[in-house]
Amino acid sequence: MKPLYLALAAFLILNIAAGLARILRGPTAADRMLAAQLFGTTGVAVLLLLAEAQAMPALRNVALVFAALAVLATVAFVNRVAHDAGASEAGSESP
Image (cartoon, rainbow, N blue to C red; front, side, top):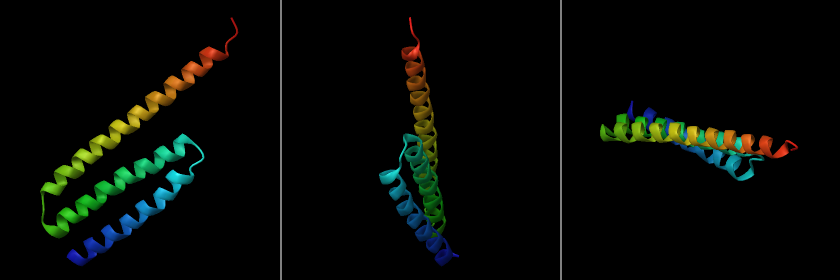
């Protein structure tokens, strides 16, 4: 099973490379955020596969921390977008 895990991890790393193109070309901030989410979830998957392939249970803990950070990044992005939308609506109202 070890070669299969390593092959899957390599495939997922290629997915991250494809996501990098979206971050560089993404027309909107939401596109870039989705690509960053791809990095987070794919990175967690790669770490879990490597933990199994290399018999290193400590990598599971690192994957858990990455998953928590990905959630926090998403919440921060949504709060920022909501705040910016509220500020633009308040600025567009005529007094």
